Image (cartoon, rainbow, N blue to C red):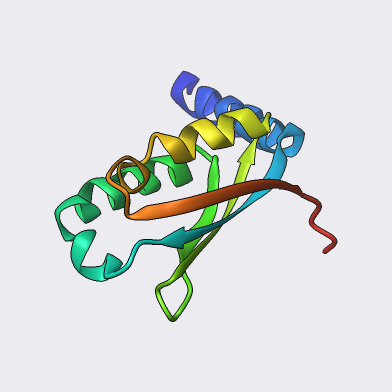
Length: 109
């Protein structure tokens, strides 16, 4: 009984927190030959993104079809947190992403 109540409470808290957070978009560029260069780091990168999505901080992220640009949508209390999250990614640290810009975003609908 307590476990069910606690799970409901945590779900409600998570829902309220996500409504208080702002959305941010990420635009960036990949290095030349990113498909090959990312291979040693891809598993770590995807695992981290999965955790960020589970935590409610990442909505979506991925490359454009030409694999030259990256686009993402984050949810956070601050732009600084999003920049820290992005700069802490192995793709940024290893030079797979070469340029990243983060902007506050208003979702119209």
